[in-house]
Amino acid sequence: DAKTTQPPSMDCAEGRAANLPCNHSTISGNEYVYWYRQIHSQGPQYIIHGLKNNETNEMASLIITEDRKSSTLILPHATLRDTAVYYCIVRAIYNNDMRFGAGTRLTVKP
Amino acid sequence: DSGVTQTPKHLITATGQRVTLRCSPRSGDLSVYWYQQSLDQGLQFLIHYYNGEERAKGNILERFSAQQFPDLHSELNLSSLELGDSALYFCASSPGQGAAQPQHFGDGTRLSIL
Image 1 (cartoon, rainbow over the protein chains, first blue to last red):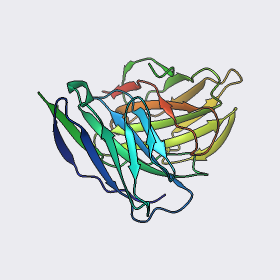
Image 2: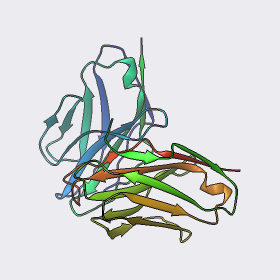
Image 3: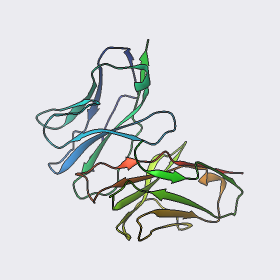
Image 4: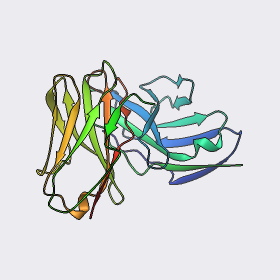
């Protein structure tokens, strides 16, 4: 699986959009981009994933650049409950495991 | 609520002991994955079972073993416990195999070795 690079921490004002970047410059064509978050010591929560196209669900939007070397997770209206560690993970289609890095600690401030 | 159930939530035991952690996957999911999260190592994949058969192994110690039963629940057995085994243990499930489908995680079992 390709390696990912995320900033260690970010702040966001409550009610504003949170844009979390992820670099995966060595990604290959058969690798998905996944985003999870972990609040305190709870189990990681699935947010969204995509292969080539941008994706949107009720939680977030995933924007993948045309060359697929980076992506951005967008939380459109961040709330205090969105404070968490966000993990960007690249998974090959045939891979059964996920490799979590250090993630980005997002703090949403009032 | 992810639909993945892990028991017990907390477990406190002593070095040298053996414990069993249990995981019930989401209804209909055939794959079960185990992960370990310790303070110094982050989240690490341990092992994957699909429909009762072992499919992939990660950084799982020989003192650890797992199985998936016909009703699809899974157990992770940890033996000869050491202080360094203190960690959060998470189970995840997905409908099938591979990366096309997301894994959904339970809330974990916190294991403390005294």
